[in-house]
Length: 381
Image (cartoon, rainbow, N blue to C red):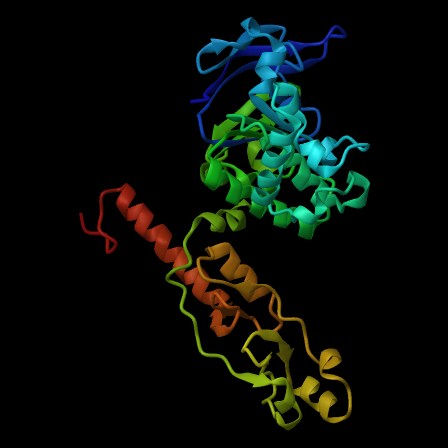
């Protein structure tokens, strides 16, 4: 068990700046809680008080009911992993020795610590061939994975993560977020994750703690409720006008119909004669989508332009298990207005339409309203 509780926590600096204001918060063991808000709202200060890097002015923080102010800071931190931007790696040590740092400090032999470190590298998706490299020889995404591996090496029950993915590009960031979800599903650590990015918070968090100016906690709730029912005007503005679109992430797309769509192999495009306004999906030998082509693109191919130059990008894909947001994104990002649905192997299985997503959303809302009021879907009590 690793419950973390803030009771009446405030932090006021000598110059009078109030970083955190009377924070009451209970973080459940095994959950991933995201502290989110704009710069200067006290989210990082609050997180750093958990491992006593910052001392509160008033109030108490407990871990499993024990007031952390009564625990030796070094002892406390040995049970808390810590990940920061760019990994915070020691540049003069190899990847393997960076990961083995905490177990060695804890008293493990260097040999045992390195053996355990190799296993942790496997867990975070890093090739063991990187173990002998130095941080400067790694990409930004690899450095962040090493940072996570180092934090996990001593198997701490609590993990603190201070904007760990903010320094990498969007594609790598999405990959790291996926890895984080996979690791948490496997390990069930008590994680406190700090970010200013509401989309990242919604993607990762079991619960969100939304902080406002002056270190005031504005709302503490599940991502779905924060999106659907912002507690304050500040939360509504911070989440954004498109919070309804973000809320689609928490709705199943199992009932969105998949329609048959016309496909063509690359070698057949020269003989293709699409109707005006018609889009045809180009697929490879394994039926995986490569792009869309219309009447103008087919004519360009016949005139000698390469297929790659004549096709339009396909947009995002709708994969098995996807949610309504992914279904809608697949449809509206496609030049044809039809999202490409694929199976587990990436082969095309049909198309999804935005109009169907809207209809399924309306049906789900009607069902929820009926259930809330004790009615059947047709309105009968």
